[in-house]
Image (cartoon, rainbow, N blue to C red):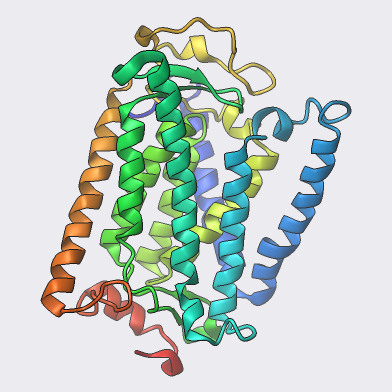
Length: 359
């Protein structure tokens, strides 16, 4: 098993997952269907949160010293991810609504690739950090280290493998300039060349990233958060996966940054199996694990971490190989041209594209 879902809390863990999954789908629909919804979610709320973050950081040594965000989520990664995802959402609105000069020039269509690549590299840096700190303690077999958010992580070779999978995933994004708006009120930004193969490669890699580096969150951000945009793309928003992904990621980061105890220290908290003795790693009332624990390799069960890391790099290498093969056969640059135009996913997405943007 990947997660410790059993006992008295299993019902609450499943309910929590369902709440996050459904909540993200609904929130994404609110954000994507109207300009007002998008502006509220990705401009007004982030401005309010920025003011909040500044205030609590100023008061971190006094009135805000016990604030959940300060105690549990004040590391560089969480802020970087939140603002990178939010900037992506705003840029996607510029493209789909053709706002200003940027929304009308062809070169700006490369923005989705750039912002997704930046988000991936942020995660890759975090993976390599965990690998270095874990292997510094335990060598190739990995070791425990205590993160700035108060969580014990077991870093090792699996982090290196998954970091490499993330880098490969960047090169699996094809058709950078094939960005379109959907016909119906231009409610969606479409990237038709980003078909199911890329989505699968991304989801496996990103799940492993959360599983290794955000262990208390991964039941939600590694499963519910990844499946929500994939589900929407598969059922009713064909071609809009990257927009769905950015929207749900930004919204989840906002929630998690303000209410971290939901996943860190509540009846909804779900631990991965790397924690061999779950009771030993129980979080305190402030949402942190005990920094004074004396841990050994016997306290870790990293088997699932290693298996998923191998799967992540394998699927990304396979998808990249398919891309290279198709680009050679079609005699196309896979980044400046679309190479999946003959696939069902691409055709269904293009049926939604506005006529003036049709390829």
